[in-house]
Length: 147
Image (tube, rainbow, N blue to C red; front, side, top):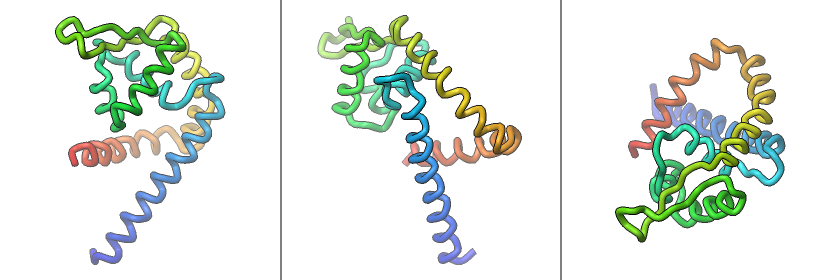
């Protein structure tokens, strides 16, 4: 394949991904419970699935954001009562974050609000096509994370 075709294919792929991301964020923002932002849901979802507490630095790394951006999100989640923040007993300068029962409820409410929209999209596209697309998107994410 020549460079022009490869470049055109890469541009088309990334254009589609970026446009999809914007459209998904817009739709999710409209259905999330009042006051919840996508970043809040993302952190709550991550903490709900995690087995252990996380530090703010670990969360920032997981979400590819600055520590300052993560601190801002965590402050809002703590204010809402969705997370517990405690000192790290091994290093008092650090903190440990865990999801609270209220955070689990908020996450469940968000998932319930999102489910019809997501389900409709999967049904319209076809479950088998979505399943076939996931490995490609996952592999792309892994390649991008490695860099």
